Length: 108
Length: 119
Image (tube, rainbow over all chains, first blue to last red; front, side):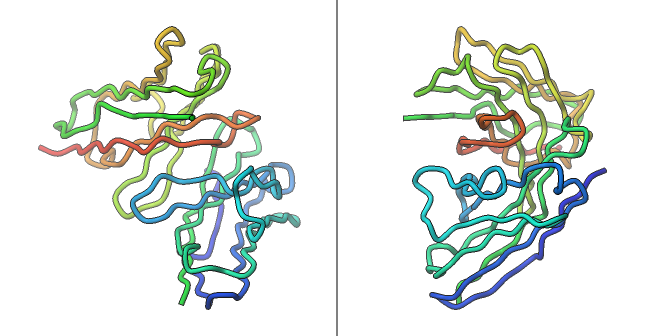
C-alpha cells in the first residue's frame, strides 16, 4: 500500500524556521496537503494543493513541492505552533487518501 | 458557522456493530462530499471512507472495506458510518470531515466521537 514518510519529530526555538518534509512516490502527480493538530483537538487544514493557504491561516505557514517531496515551512515559529503536523495525499489511482505518520513539532 | 457534530460513540464488545452519525450545519450539506477519518489513541490519522455529495460514489480504506459502510441523508443533513464486526483495533476517535474543492482532502473537521471496542 502507498505510504507517505515524515520525520517523527522536529524541534526549533521560537522565531526560527521549521521545515517538515513528506516523501511519497506519487507526489510528483498528486497534490500534498498539511494539517495541524494541537493536543486534544481536531485537525485543521493549513496548506492545500501543495502551497495554497486557506483563509485565516497565518502567512508564516507555507508549502512547497519538489519531485517526490512536499515541505511545510513555518517561518518565525511561535510557541502556539507546537503541535502534530500531518501530510496527506492520494495514491496514484486516486481512489485512496493517505496520511503521513505525523511530525511532532516542539518549540523549545 | 460551519459545524460538524459526531455522535454514537461508546463502548462496544468485539464482533458487535455500531452506527456513528455526523450532524452538519452552517453550510449546504447536499453540495459537499464527506469523509470519515479515525485516530487510535496516541496514533496518527487514518482515512476510512468518502461519499460523494449525492451518494453516487464511495471509496473505502483497505482496513475497513467490507466491514464499514458510509452513507448520508441529505434531507437530514447527516452523515453516517455503519461499523460491523468491530475489533479491538477499531478503538479510536472517529472524525467526520468535509471534502475540499476536490474530493481527496479535508476542508473542515468535526470534534470527533470516541469508540472503544472492549469486552
